[in-house]
Image 1 (cartoon, rainbow, N blue to C red):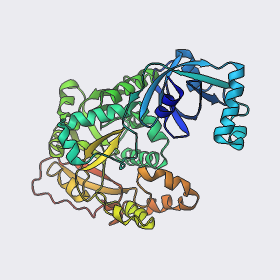
Image 2: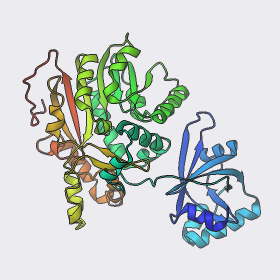
Image 3: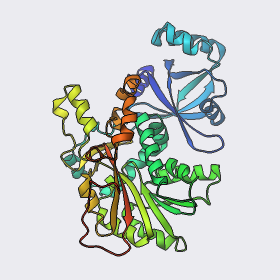
Image 4: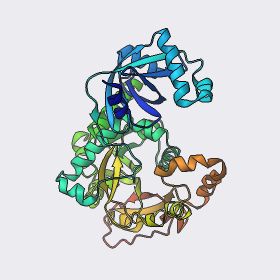
Length: 426
């Protein structure tokens, strides 16, 4: 590949992602690194000789490079001594003396990445609300909705743990969600998870319960979860099943001997399920009494988002969620998602469940797609996390989060005239 072509593929960003596969686990391992190009090859430096990504790449002799728009397959070998010296000089010119001295002057390894074949053009991985496709344009594509959702999450699967794990807001939300779930479960419970992704929540929750049936609409997510379970020897603790939320009646057919004591779904999988009432009915049918369902969905009103736009004088971005469905970016693919006012979503579960609790998640912290801005000022804004603890479950703040966390309890008998009380925390 010519130098000019390589630079086009890598784009203008100062870093690239290198994707390797674990030597023992087979799991994707993603790192973001600085780089330089010379003579049609990509060179990267590693401070530690035994970094996992380095050992993975050298063991396999290949890796993949992810730039904004492209995926490039490369061969990997260790650079020779004279190349290492030239790469250090190229780093100084590109990144400056201080960064090179502080981060790379004692770098123990220099890897040479040589492109193999032609790059694959992929959608740019953007922030969740940074989309280029309108709903009308998506409809014109003529793809079935659930198929689009499955393909989008397939495309996100390999980098999913890296994306979530490097986002403070997302990890904060995950911790709070799991903490609330454990209030309503016990060690002898079998739980059902809707939208398990790569299984990070399931693995953590499995330490506290008897068993988890982890479901997801994405084949790739289920494949990665299965590799994790094999490596951690958790096959008897977590059962992965590929299915959509509205298909959960199949759980009873596949696993007829298991009693399901509770269910959970975090970070908005149900925003991508168009048949919420069907899901509620099936969940009521398979959930043992007095089972609890704890879930979070994206809200149509997010107080911190509105405040952020006001403070930055972005008046044109006020109330960005008022029109539904809203287009979101997942793994570089734009798909529609359905955000809900809390009272409307709760009403969808009548007459099968009783609402026990509502939590805004988060209320004062910004949405996850604004994470970089929050982290930049966290030394001043971390007090918001303490205030969150005090107000997030109180009316009206529990209605104003980026997400709303619901705690439902199964009705022993159907109550067709049940009224939803969104002010109560019981």
